[in-house]
Length: 153
Image (tube, rainbow, N blue to C red; front, side, top):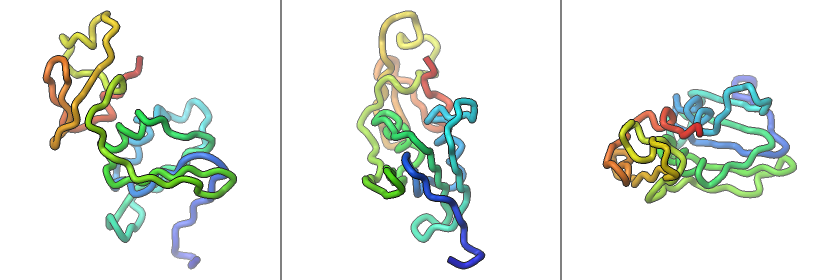
């Protein structure tokens, strides 16, 4: 490795999210609920050279494997991403994200009058469409800033 190449240490166990569109790493951290207060060891590379994307972001999270719902939301902002599961410094699983047909119970509807925002025990449900997401209850569209709609409840 030349002295001009990026050096990021390997992680013992955890997840490496690679091939994230340049500039989206902070949104990835938001989706994962990582704000620096809970002690996870995280490495972030932003705008690093990529043969496939030109420029990309990389997020490494130690001692954590992603849930299927987290991967679903990640696929919306990083459709080219690969999820690498690392155990004992070795990649044991490598998957490309796939856009789901629907996302359930992960995002909150921006329509304050939607039934999912009332005191009803109703999980949010969004259909994934070509230009964003559509709430299955009220029809409201989310076209961007998916990370801002992560359900914090």
